[in-house]
Length: 187
Ligand code: GRF
Image (cartoon, rainbow, N blue to C red; front, top):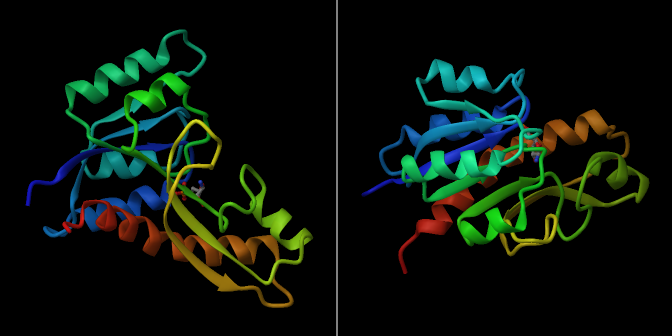
């Protein structure tokens, strides 16, 4: 199998990055992680790139033309899939168009419910019965692209935000790899 050259974008902890690096070691898993990009120089997740000798790029989004620099790097490394794993910046429409259908994101709610930030607090406030995570294509609408995979769980009466986060992330570690496999499944 020819694995797809993949870039993971992060901003923080990087636990999804860590999970995807581990999965990509499996010879049947359809991607190779060739680049990690972070907009946060202090992102904890950078350590996983370093530990695994994966090229890493810090991008200062306050610099004009920063996306141009990203595009150059992605082209140079022949990247064909971009995974947003806790990347907290919005990509420009131009960028999204350029990589149309090749950018996917993981979001901590059952989209189309709870787009945007602070999902766990809003899930509790709305007294939802269930919640979970979604992997979806990125389009010009925030958290609005076609859904690839969702995983859900039912809330317990005393669940706090921190409980929801733990339970959601556990599901994320299943959902992201599953979505990637689904993308490249033949037939
Ligand atoms: C995940 O919960 C994801 O749903 C959201 O950001 C979080 C990133 O976590 N988009 P991590 O950095 O992968 O640990």
